[in-house]
Length: 141
Image (cartoon, rainbow, N blue to C red; front, side, top):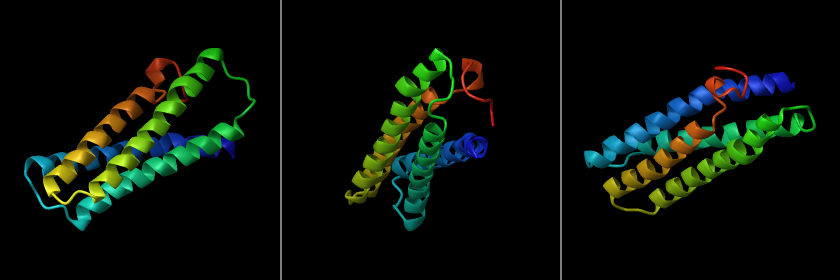
């Protein structure tokens, strides 16, 4: 079961990153071109946020199922000091950005708010993923 959850968490990372990049690109284009904020835009931003929340839940389930297993000190430090806190901060930033954007009536400012919060979240997510070249984690998938 743990193996399946870890694979789901690792594979879902790519969907989350693609959705987040699409949401950021959508927000940037909407902001710079002063487009109207439509339901389609809202759904793109909402789905990116929802998938980040799902990814965090799967990660927390994997963490608790893996609790007490033998891991190296460097891996333990990475997950407890970097990965989990930065992922949670990213999720909170996206939630705040999405919530703030709903209260803004000017569409370009709405797009700008999403763009800023989601971009900061993406940077934190990219920094805290255990990429294979860092010697942490399980690989690319």
